[in-house]
Amino acid sequence: ERREAVIKIGGMTCAMCARTIEAALGEVPGVLDVSVNLGTESARVSYDPGLVTTDDIKKAIEEVGYQFIGVE
Ligand code: 9UX
View 1 (tube, protein in one colour):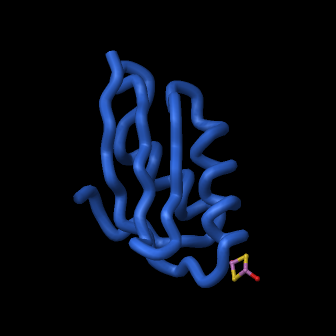
View 2 (tube, helix red, strand yellow; view 1 turned 120 degrees about the horizontal axis):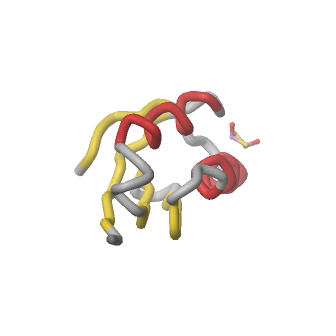
View 3 (cartoon, protein in one colour; view 1 turned 45 degrees about the vertical axis):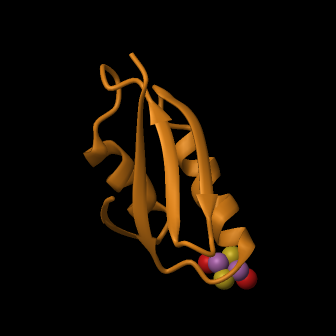
């Protein structure tokens, strides 16, 4: 199964912040695709809900130093 979520993220200042979060989310097993948008301060994440929960996404974002604001 493939599900898509838009996650609001806090703490991004430059384009490298977005790349850091993309890399972190991309390493989570079951994340199929990720695109972080600095301008809208959000990430669009496609994932297999059998392998990934939104809490896993939250933890991955926080581990690299940004804030998980919530699911849009
Ligand atoms: Mo840019 Mo983001 O110099 O933590 S990588 S601000």
